[in-house]
Length: 372
Image (cartoon, rainbow, N blue to C red; front, top):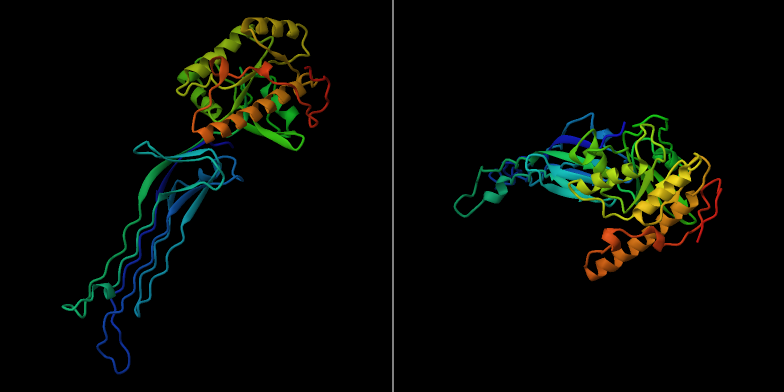
């Protein structure tokens, strides 16, 4: 079960009580105060773990409370600090305070963490209250209460490239052919109900490709599971837009392409500025080449023709994406050095025609050669 949103109640442990104690030894019947401090309560921490793939492991328990610190003892013995609780989530998880709505931290990199409920400090023992006018204090501090709050965890899949398009456009089949991912594949729409990730290997390098659930018209306004699907597109650097040449409902494939672009543009965080590779899928069907030409003429730029069944065009599209990612990462590094945002050409998109083709040894069978 894939879970990408969960709400939890978290509470840090209370601090241990300080001790009220006096030194009692042979020949020293009236020793001074020696009460030790209480231990600190444990904190609740959310940490990004690369071995976690979704939030399903946190759905069975809604309340998480860390242990309290131990009470202090005599002879200035301090109570033991309590260990914290660490909740492991996938990288890409956004941690929010549910009541206030603000982001506590965006856990992007593995190892990123945030304390969501800090444990209370242990109370001081009576040894701290001794003074020239109070030689035998009995005062001590109870431990502080640990923080508590409701938090919401929201996962946005992190992938270098994402497959978008109408349901049944062939996204899952393509992912299964260019990686070792095994998404559910069927001939009916909405087979994919949650993102699937696969690693595409190119020589010694590679990139993460996400099969995102099919979008429908009105997704940007939340129709269907539009918002749940679109937010996973936010993390991707490049989009592979698959267009089915002959939709089962008889719709115009060119119109379908523009419908998806409209949903990306109208989302709360506009996504249509991401670099895009446009592909007409199911090249094995008669007439698919004519649909590709029609869409290319409408867009005024390159449209690839691919088939996940025969392998046609797979080397070409993966090579395009790999080189686009290399260019984007290089520009990101240069922009970070200059502390300036990256500026994409042509209405925020990098043209696929600006890139050359590379061979992809991991895709079989290589039924077509990359064209210059």
